[in-house]
Image (cartoon, rainbow, N blue to C red; front, top):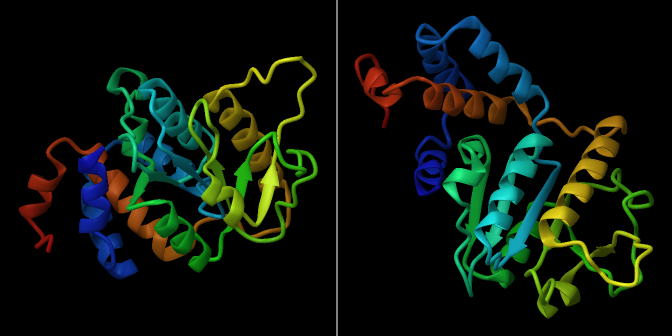
Length: 235
């Protein structure tokens, strides 16, 4: 996880041409089939929708959140870890952390400020507020971030007070029985599908696509960085 995050920071900020030149060189070490998979996946990636998780304790839930994001095309996963580390289990996450950017925040205040500054609506997922459902939530009103809390306490009071909107999954049982992982899977799937069927511009922009394709290609090539150093200065 740390290695993936460091690579994101290490290779940020270059021009489209910089990424394209290096990606073209790395393509020589991959099959066309593999490059096709990377390109098709990139076309479905989005930063219009993202998630923030607060103090996810259980490694299996952390792993599931990463896998949900990867499976349904969410490129970024934001975390707050003031009480416990966000630590996906390597055997459960199954390598999906290589393809999702995990962005760690100092605390909830900093996370909210960063997300709102970037234009995101902060949407608290909670069954305890009058709120939208996955069917009625307006996916066209601008980029949004779903916030998931701890397994037992839910989202923090700070999130509830700062949220722009609230979202719940209606249930028919006598017990609120959905855990964080199950709730996230339902919401990420339903809202990402509705987003893609809408008229909003949900795809990642060209400069970001070039950067992502470079990083993904680099990660796909065995000893990719060493190979790159034969031809390019990676600084």
